[in-house]
Image 1 (cartoon, rainbow, N blue to C red):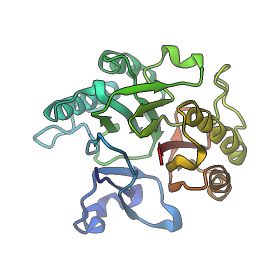
Image 2: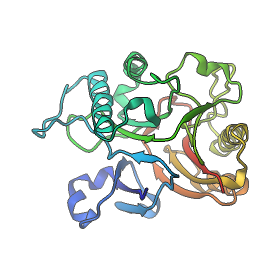
Image 3: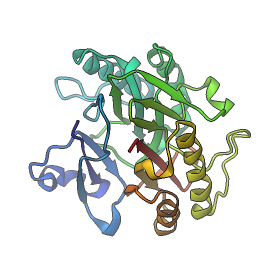
Image 4: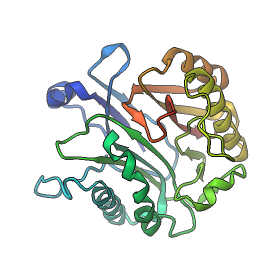
Length: 284
């Protein structure tokens, strides 16, 4: 299927309709900033996905009357977005059981309650035995006043297989390192986390974080039987203080065919991380 992603900087949210100038995007990501100080960017056929993919429009907690639901209740909004994604998928003959990734965007004040989403995810995801990849990013604001979360969900009509190089931490989580669907390997967000001790590594060095993080991505890629050359897209979310050029140099050295989408974020769920990456591989 054809996909498109648009990015709108927080400072330009009030000008969104003007900036998009009639563009129609499937995914709309609010970001802190864009390279070169741009206010808006749209990318066509990004990320590239394989046969069987279903990419839902970005789900925000706004009901049919245009009102934000569960105002002030992050977990309530998160659960509502999951249920809305499930409703949309069921209209297409699928359900959240077919989800391959769930990427969520929230605000820094939700960090302390984010863990409470575990039960909501566990009650709704993995019903067919395969949990999706996942990632969580913090922005200072989102699409609408009163909104605390936005959710991007991709599903597949093909049989799913979880990919894990043997990291035991995922045994109790509601997401997995990777999900294989046909010729596409969908992956979780990755940061510089020691998979055994859960320690965040290199807290003041984003280039060292990139070296460690992309090495972990490569382990998942190779576990699925893919090669580094088949990593075709990454979304890099970089915190204040992160070295975008240095991170990019590591990425391009390790994955020579990759297309990168780069944007700034307000922070990550682990405050020690200076960047997080969402990778995707497609078999050549």
